[in-house]
Image 1 (cartoon, rainbow, N blue to C red):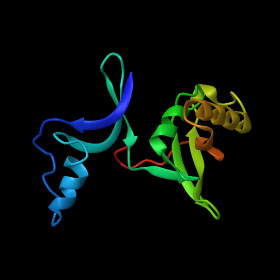
Image 2 (image 1 turned 180 degrees about the horizontal axis):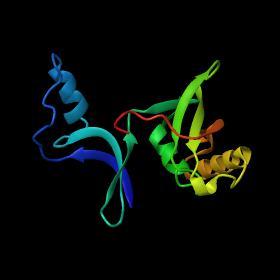
Image 3 (image 1 turned 90 degrees about the vertical axis):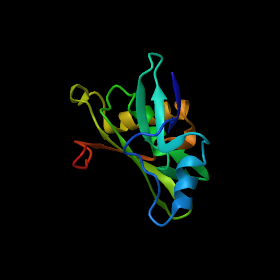
Image 4 (image 1 turned 30 degrees about the vertical axis):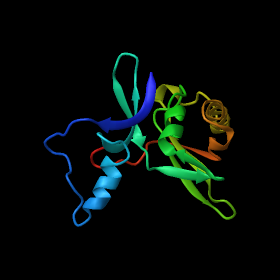
Amino acid sequence: NVSGVLCISQAWPGMARTIYNDHKRFLETYLTPYPGFFFTGDGVYRTSEGYYQLTGRLDDIINISGHRLGTAEVEDVVNHHMAVAESAVIGYPHEIKGEGKMLAFLPLKRLSRGYCTAETLAAELRELISKKIAKYAAPEYVQVTHRLPKTRSG
């Protein structure tokens, strides 16, 4: 069980070879961070059985009180709660801290509706995130929703 950055060691037929009118940017973005590998920009989790699970884009970062925090990292912890079906975490403006607060949207599992109040769920999630990541990473607000908006591809 290990988490990390998804990099690919061999070329494949449909891969990008440049960025139009900016080949230097292509090299700096995809080939320079991990020499000898193509950097996809995604985080990944590998199970002890060898299965891979993409955890999200590494560039989705929220700056909370000077701490850079990936949204996928927080969503991964939140999704381990037994009542949560999936989650979306976003940052939003704070008049003093800049982007200093976080909001979590949570559709619940069908069997878990009525499991607890929104306040109880929010408190449990804050405690879980405080233990797994850090206290500053806990979302200030938790919004229970019926579903998350999706693109056509899901």
